[in-house]
Image (cartoon, helix red, strand yellow):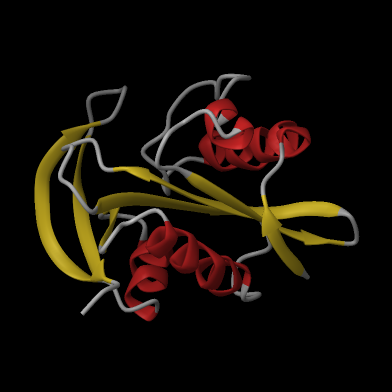
Amino acid sequence: MIVRSGRSSDGQAMIEILQEIVDIGGTTAFEGTVPATFLEGHLSGTKSGSAVHVAEADGNVIGFQYIEPHPSGTEGLAQIATFAKVGGTQRGIGSALFVKTRVAALALGYDTIDATIRADNAGGLAYYARMGFADHSVRKGQPLSDGSPVDRVSKRLKIIS
């Protein structure tokens, strides 16, 4: 497995990975159809403050991770998202991606990274805890598209001491 910066040509593979996860349900806040332009700005370098990395094996994208400015606009705070091909979890994909993402976050001037995870996503919560993220806050009862309430857990990692 190699980890490298994402390129525009990776977009379709990334969409397919995310769409399969969305279609299965239960582990991501994304719902419905992933837009064809998803992460286009990240991959083209036009979205300021963002970085995307892909994990590749045998020439195929098997996972990706991105950071971007946190929606709160808080200076120095990035948000992160990580996705691995279904069946590819527990293979070190996320850990390998985070090594590169952390370096990119520092280079972009971030000092803290926020991961917001559905409370029913045990794998995602465990992954970010393994990476050193600590619980920060919980948004209770955030409705899914069908109205079902699911808490969102925000975990944060200070990358500059």
